[in-house]
Every structure is written in C-alpha cells, then in structure tokens.
Image 1 (spheres, one colour):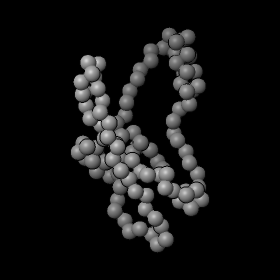
Image 2 (tube, helix red, strand yellow):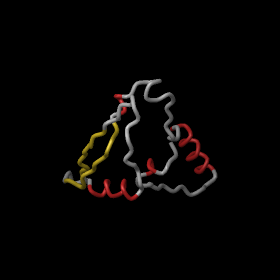
Image 3 (cartoon, helix red, strand yellow):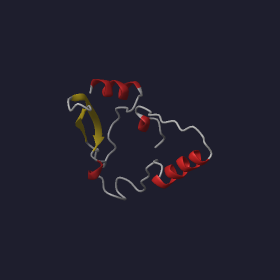
Length: 103
C-alpha cells in the first residue's frame, strides 16, 4: 500500500483544493486483494485506491462518461492480422497507466 501511495504522490495525482460551494466530495476507499501463486501460497498483496463513483448523480456531478479501453473485437482483429502477416506480437504493462491519461 505504501508503494501505491508513493506512486500517487510522485505522479502528482492530486492537489489539495478548497471544495467549491454547493459541491459534494466523492469519497474513496482502499480495496485489498491477495494474489496466490501456482502452489496456492500467498504470492503478494495488492491494494487499490478507488473512488466511490456510485454516489455521483448524472447531470449533477457529471455529464458524459468515457472509458479509453480497446474493444475485444479490435484486439482480436489486430492479433489476427499479426498472425496472418507473421508479425511478432509483444505484450506490456504500464504501471499506473490510468494516471497518465487526460481527463
């Protein structure tokens, strides 16, 4: 959990500001998960800070929503094309990727 907090602080994820008049803050909570390895023993602990977005009201707290995630059909089409053309396929993971996008 400390690594998550450090990453959030290093990325300047938030700034402390005064709450505008008439606005209600969105609270957050920590969600914990235990990841097990192939032998069934504890591999690592994971922690995620999540906003309680379900408390928001449409047209009051937000107007539009968007999720920058590729559709499964797009991923399948890219992998299919790479297979047909004998292109190498690579996989990667970007830590804290959601922090690097524009809102």
